[in-house]
Amino acid sequence: MAAGRRQRNVRTVVVLGGILVAMLTLVAFSVPLYRLFCAATGYNGTTQRVVADAGTISRRVVTVRFSTSVAPDLPWRFAPLQESVKVHLGEEKLVYFSATNTGTTPTVGHATFNVTPAKIGLYFDKIQCFCFSDELLAPGKTVTMPVDFFVDPALDKDPEAKDVDTITLSYTFFRAEKPDDIENLSRFDPNAPPDPVRGAKLFAERCSGCHALDRVKIGPPLGTVFDRAAGSAPGYPYSPALRHASLAWTVANLDRWLADPQALVPGNKMPIKVLEANARRDIVAYLEHIRADRRTTAATAGAAPAAR
Ligand code: HEC
Image (tube, rainbow, N blue to C red; front, side):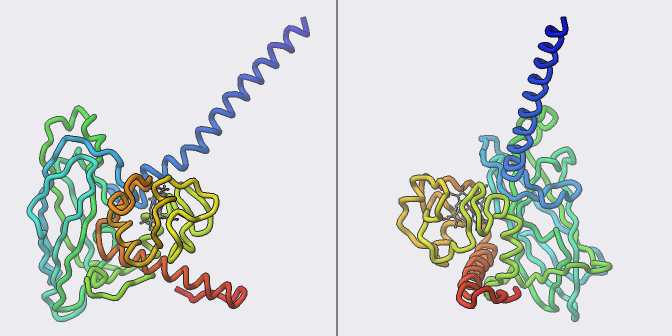
């Protein structure tokens, strides 16, 4: 009888062990999945900031309208450059707003935003927005600011959102009371020089979910990508399309790749784009900068890279 009980105990241990392995596997894979689909870098009340777009584009179209206002004590003019846009659910869209400091001193503003109907806020995903930080604007300056967003295709599955065909996005700029981590709106100036420091930030927000500098992640390592031949990082399982694309990662090719990977190398498997030109410019400057750093570091055998 002891033998029978031992057998049952062994079976219980095996079953529990199996469950444990299954759970660990799930946990291990949920990290890349999480990074890939919903790496929110800041949950900002009503809307979410995300790294990659939703991947699937649905046939359903919604109209997104824009409205803006400025608090009375902030001497800024602030307006959308388009009244509304039509987007497919899941389609990444770039829209622009213009801000002018009509005062005589530099001022720091902070934007808040609101989505109506309120139940839609959860589905409104921003990739890039000036509304995440305190923003400095020089007197007399006008800047055009991008917002890069998509509406989550999951909206289509929400019975409460069946009737929704128009979404309104409202921004209000306030004077920042205790400015913190100030960003300069001049970064959106198309004539500004490339900024590798901003590029590093954008890389962390928008690329690092899939790319590391010196190891394979979901994508190939990018620490030495600048000037490298496409599809040539050792140990990475490239798509045949990218492996056989005969191009080098120059400034121009990196810019075209980030603007639309499928247009440059049809059939490759990188699922995102960077719609905004200044963001691409700065990310590419960062990739060029770290590549140069790595060369210097190698040449001077371990000397500290330039502190940027
Ligand atoms: C959701 C995952 C994902 C994100 C986010 C992502 N990439 Fe990629 N990237 C990939 C994959 C996968 C590949 C390989 C594509 C292939 O083999 O077809 C790739 C390839 C590349 C390559 C080609 C490298 C080579 O060795 O030829 C470059 C350059 C690149 N990515 C840059 C970026 C930059 C810059 C960003 C951030 C703006 C970014 N990627 C964001 C998944 C991603």
